[in-house]
Image (tube, rainbow, N blue to C red; front, side):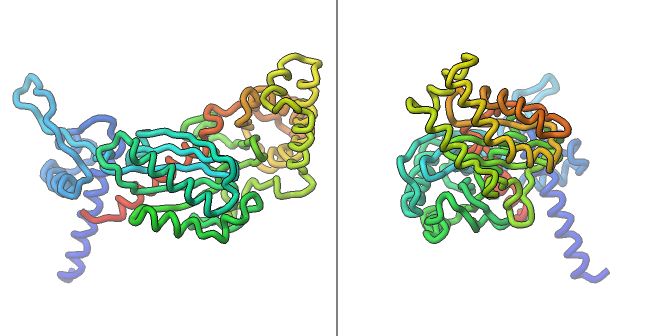
Amino acid sequence: MTTQALGTDLAAMRRLNDHAVLTTLWDASSPMTASQLATSTGLSRTTVETVLSGLVESGLADSEQLRPTRAGRPARGYRFAADQGVAVGIDVGPHGISGVAGDLRGTVSAAHRRQEHDLSSGEHAAAAIIALVTELLDESTTASHELVALTVGIPGIVDADGRPVKTTVVPDWLTSDIDAQLRAAFPGARIAFDNDTKLAALAEIEHGSVGADETAVLLRIGNRISAASIVDGRVARGAHGAAGEIGALGRVAWPEAQQRLAERAPDGLEQLFTAAAAPGTEGADAVTGFAADIADGLGALVLAIDPHVVVVSSSIPGASARLAAALGSELAGRSLFLPDVRTSALGAIAPSVGALAVSAARVKEQLFAREY
């Protein structure tokens, strides 16, 4: 073996050792001693101590004195330094913005929600994102307030590289170069975009109403209707990031269905859904009619992926449960195998929760690409 090859092999071995220790610290819920890390990773204690020295020096691990045991002197515990930066998830659309901040592992460190009247222009949307991210950074309980990763959920199709490529909801955003404005405001941070409903679907898998291996359809109903598909516990993206965009098919007529529902709610949708609790009322009839209007599009998705579950999520107070019941009845005649129709466990915060999860995953990806 040549000296160069030997050096390459040793460098690769060091990276494997670094990653083994860092992965174990990342996943640990409490500080671990060098002996515990050696047992968990299968590495020698000497190797673990060498790796820990590098991680502490680079700021990726903290050490602390643990309580002494009966055996004698206290051991030193090590943990991943998750509070040495902030990951942020943002959900923004033409009518509002919300966001959540977390430490580098994605554990929530600051939550905030703010509504805007009109964010249809790219300039206003960028300004709102920058303002909210700045507030979240200031409010974060982490030791460091440096933004490391930001994921922004938008009502549009986003490609595999995290770039918005198509939207009919906020077309001005595509020509306003929001990405460049965010990078100028937060230099050094990893910034990416994703579809808001796909982010909500990810959040439902990790924290919500969809099991780890389940196939599901997520239907979100608010200012617009959107859907995402989950296959075997993974969000389906498709070749161009457009999987699940059944609403783009004109004959599905979801916007028209929403318009008809709004026309039957002169006092507002929240009041209509409250009134729908009583059978035989105008409110109940309106909800039943709305469910029938949107069921063909939902049924097409159900037939396409044969889900265990349909998750119904609405930002309209009181709407999710009423719609889930009505849609369950409608799907009975539109599916070969009737899925379990559930309400979302997360509701309106799901896209920002999913965005935070993506930001934390990007932090982990970046860390494991480094050498220590």
